[in-house]
Image 1 (cartoon, each protein chain N blue to C red):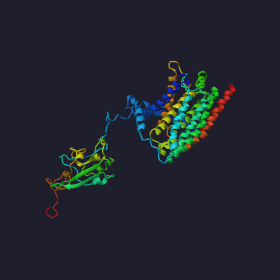
Image 2: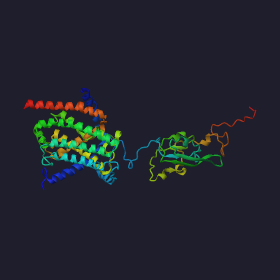
Image 3: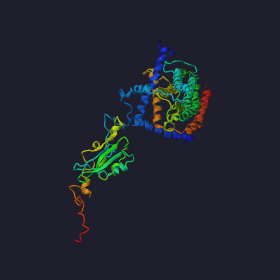
Length: 179
Length: 319
């Protein structure tokens, strides 16, 4: 019984005082619509599709994001232009299913899909939460300013032949005997 | 019509004030809790969010008032009315200030205890008539908790009754004018009454009958609309009642230095205890059900009996 009294005094009363002393601590929250909270740059919010420094779409429609997505909210269809560049014919994200996990960003080999600190995406109609490629595509490069997939990749496209990429050697002619 | 104990005007004013205070506690509690949790709380409806209560009331009155088809209709509707009625009845014997009150009953203390016991019927009927597992569990817990904590609640006040020699709450206050506040000679009684009062009004940390994390909302799981609102306001009324009773029994009721009117002293003291109850909710986690029961029967009961015994011995030896 004595230990119970001792515990009550030391634990419960101290708890009460500690909680009470929070009365003169400044509130941690902000008045949201009037006052915007600071969103950290790495906050995982609205998903965008970025462009490379030349202004072309970065997405090569590899479908890795759609595979990585745990809730299957990404849908896309690959197509090719006349230069040999791959790009998505359509790219659709259903934000009513998206859980903002960022797995798509991690899976993306070309830094095309990125998450931004914007979170104000409420809509009155559920259908409005499905975003098409036009809605997702931004004009800038997002977080990676210099990266251009077709400049570093070995894929041959119009205007860039095999061996012309950055850090890429000219292909070896395996049939030639010359040193 | 004059403003005196028992006049119609007095009854009306007390009834309106008590219900208004209980409703305002919704806002007070949310605001205080938020301060203690480093938040801002409801502050957008009206100045400081004071009109939040109005918004809540509009919401709760326009909600669908649904009686489940499997429920026992009569007792389902009766249950929330009981808790409001018995707690408002208890207020009739509380002396708020000289000349302010409903009745000066010679059995005031017993009347309050009797009404508190009747409150157990409300939760039991609510749980039984809902025909819901969680509601039944909540009602079971509420019944056991309220019945066992009533015992020490009664015994803990007996020290005060023995010291003042009366069951009349107004005379208990007047006796404290000569003898000083009873919190000093009856400190153990005060602590036990405080704990039992929290358990009796099933407020946190003793809200085991309606523990949200374990059994939905306990006995009022199936309630909606204003019937739920009556349970809700009934709980706050119980809070105000317990705070007023502590003020009357242990802290000298309306007594205080003369620079403030008596009713203000009473309100200040009662509000301090209401704030303390809200602090308890913010700070103390809920005990397990069996811990609550064993704490009551194995610790509070012997201590309260001992307190009564020693008080009686001292009174006998000094008289």
